[in-house]
Image 1 (cartoon, rainbow, N blue to C red):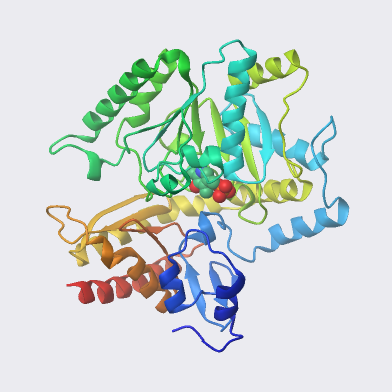
Image 2 (cartoon, rainbow, N blue to C red; image 1 turned 135 degrees about the vertical axis):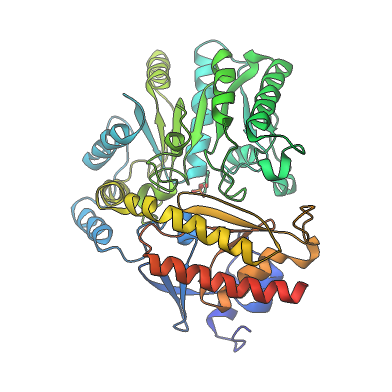
Length: 456
Ligand SMILES: *Cc1c(COP(=O)(O)O)cnc(C)c1O
């Protein structure tokens, strides 16, 4: 129950704050959780209650909520140069260093980096780059963008058009020319008896047929998350990118990896495309880029797109795009430190070390709860899919809001996890100890037992 005294944090939070992506009836009934500080992978609310945040904030606080090295990097840069832009041939030294570092840790032999304030803006920027190339290179009809149903690419008008979620209809989106292919979730969309490889081959045929139907000369790019994040932590079926990449290459369509969640270690490799053995033409990064300590996104262009964009921009004098805070020196200083921390101070090693225990914990919960229909995981991202009936894969009735109930029960047990459709998604910080991982599963187990008993 929320504290209903008029000046409680819950009442104040309800009065003047407009919540995005929030079940409003539920937040009215229960009150918002108002967070005031963090300790490692835990956050603490205004009443002093501690929660293990099994979603790393919004996937991004991978080094926890009080990392001293990241705080010191921010403080030092604020003291030296607290802000600067990257327009008109001026740029901060930190942004120069970060671009070098991002290209060095990217899968590309060379490349160029463009900065934004968010993942949505980075996807918008990439689309505008492709449209700019189409116009300047003399193929103005090459504008359509291919993504997947269930894919999440952000909320700005273009990024929302790329996102394959039904709620975008409430905004009259997608814009024309944004085409959504089948969601590559084998458990849900595979035909009876179809292997993962056969499913991947079928999706590659769908891609080819779509390209031919639309006209190969009308398509500017294909964007995909290596593992779908906000679609429900869905790893691709076996052979998926190996089946799709040659189709795209044959038609000269760039493959953009939206690595906003996967990038910097979430899947156990630096990049999700490395976990799944494919080479994109460009990478979109954000979230983990600064370990959540600063709003920043980046478009990392591989050699071919970097050269084409540079040539096109020179042909018309400039690439007329950018944000006031693009390449912010404090964000860049934090990102440089975050890369050191994740890649150099053992965090990615910990993701690799914990991944088997994480997968085993999910499998164990499915073994204990007949109302779990599927578990899935890669690195430290995973999900449990709730079902009314496992054998027939029948979901719970939508009005029961099963995943919302589970997430609320988790809160009552001191655990934050995320409801997504009928799945519960887990993406804990990379600093988790094995004991904290076990604590996460114990709390989730108790929440699941309570909710499934209620719904039986
Ligand atoms: C979160 C996310 C975005 C959008 O990033 P914002 O910073 O919220 O705009 C884009 N792509 C993916 C894969 C994401 O998870």
